[in-house]
Length: 139
Image (tube, rainbow, N blue to C red):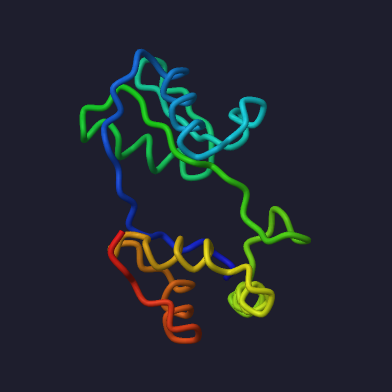
């Protein structure tokens, strides 16, 4: 995958007092440590147009059409253990999941993939449905 795939994203309103509170609320939900918030959460703020994170320009263009004051999102680094900051090719991802299955450590990963909203259909997900039969299930 040379160019990251654009996929449907879902969003929800978050009622908090300011951008910092929104970052903290998202970090709590996603299990992101306080010291990693500045790296692992992307954001855009209407008041001054400031932004940070992958996809920020696209989100900055999208947000005003929804009359939002600010937006936060997970901005986690891509990669697998041993290959951080590199978007893995599908064969490496499939091998990773097969290794988890072989070790009996796949339950959480499988549940995460299978419970993702149906609208989130990536090339990876299509491949895992085909190769591992990890078909969608209701959350």
